[in-house]
Structures are given as structure tokens and as C-alpha cells.
Image 1 (cartoon, helix red, strand yellow):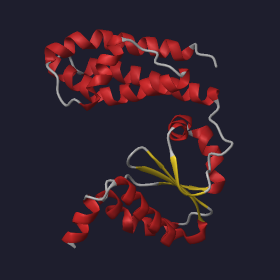
Image 2 (spheres, helix red, strand yellow):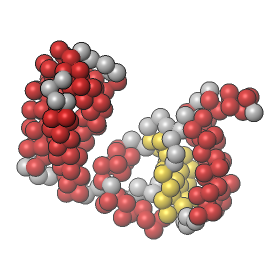
Image 3 (tube, one colour):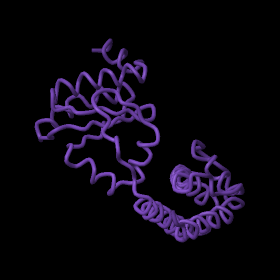
Image 4 (tube, helix red, strand yellow):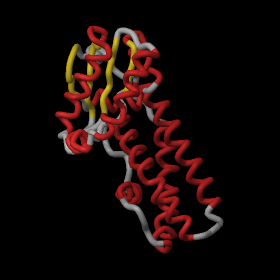
Amino acid sequence: MWITFYTMSFMSPADAVKTLERDLQTIFGARLQSLIAYGQRHTLAVVDTLTADDLRACARRASAWHDAKLTTPLLLAANEFASALDAFPLEFGAILSDHRIVSGRNPFAGLSVDPADLRRAVEVQARSHLLHLREGFVETRGNSDALAILIVESAPAFAALLQSVSRLDGRAAHGPAADAIAALADVHEISGAEAERLFPPYLEAVEKLVAHVDTWHA
């Protein structure tokens, strides 16, 4: 058992995806239409049908997939796929822009994300970030250490927001203040003094992003 864990843990991303493909072939057989990889660890499987038994079979293998440093694959029935693009334009827009076909047909052939759907999704993302940032600031009760935690914990979501806005525009739409916060996405701690300095331009940058997205037209 220890040897199995060791092997899975140190498997390369490409080998891990191939192992996932074999597992999904075992579970779905000919019903597996496509397996898509995106990023280093993420996958999407499109299948003819998806049952509770299929999900149970996947659940039994989930620990091995995670040991191989893969996230749980997204599973979609073929009849759900096109409507999923409309419902999740940000997520599927990101997959569309950077993916590879592991097996089967290309489910994205001839498909695109509607710019209007993408704009609405980015607006929701931006406004939500602004509201949570304001709420979080009030809840710091003026404590600079709490403010530092707020900034560090919100930085990854802000970096994702910047990526979404860039995808909408096709170009970067932010400045030095926004870049300074996005650079904290992989940082675990900043000082209270630094937080006091960073927060005002951070808040202003988010407000400007909301205004920008609100008035954006394709």
C-alpha cells in the first residue's frame, strides 16, 4: 500500500492524466466521449450518460486521483455541455482558452462563450469582491493585523478577477495598485503597516474595475 501511495504521489502530471483516463474508460466505457485537460491538474470529462453508480465508482478512485495531484474531474453529460457554457462563462471561457484533448472528440468545436454572458459573470465577480472587501474591512474593527489577513486572504480572488477582466477586454485593464495586490496571491503574511498602506489603493482599484466592467461593450 505504501508503494502505491509513493508512486501516485510522484507521478508526472501527464502520467497522472493518463491514469485518470484509464480509470474513466473503466467506469464509462464507450460512454466516455471526451477527456479534456486544462492547467496542470484539472480535467473535464464529457460522457453520454451519468448515473449515481458512475459517481460512486468515481468516488472510490478519488483518493488516488488526489494523491496524483489531480483535482476531481468535472463530469458533464453530453446534453448538459452546451448550456453549461452559458451558465458558467468564466469557467468555460478559461478552459476554452487553454486546454488539450486527452482522448475523444473536441467538445468545444464550433462553440464560444457569448461576450454578454461573460460580461455579466465578470460583473458579478467584481461586485461580489467589492462588497466582501468593504464588509471585511468593517469587520477588522480598525485592527491593522486583521486588515493584513483580509488583504492576503482576498488576494488570490482578486488575481482571478484581474484575469477575468483581461479575458473580457483581451488586454490588461489595471494599474500598479492592482498589480501589487495580485502579487500577494502566493504570499502568506504581510505586516499591519503594509496593510494600512495597501488597502486604500486596493479598494479604489476594485471600485474602478466594477465601473469599467459595468460600462464595457463588446
